[in-house]
Amino acid sequence: MANVTIIVNCDDAKDIDRIQATATITNLNSKQVFRSVKFIKNTLTEVVLRGAYKITLDGVIRYIDKNNKVRVRTFRSTTNFVSITGSNDTHLLMQTIFTD
Image (cartoon, rainbow, N blue to C red; front, side, top):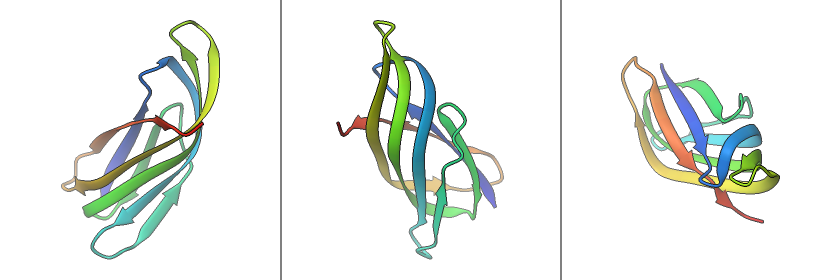
């Protein structure tokens, strides 16, 4: 087992207040799918089996932009391959793609 920590990054944001999203973590070998919504601010940590994964995020982000305006926007983010190995944490920075 290994920890994967997903950190959501938004270039528009001065500060990310909250993320309400579903992370879908798919093992590319076994096709096993994990889903999680346990974001704390912009970070989610899950324990998964070691292996190769595809990770997608779909949801809503609330943040303060560079003009100090509170914004709420829908977003997606995806990575087609990430290798989660060893006993150390794997940290993955995922960039928002706004869909609104």
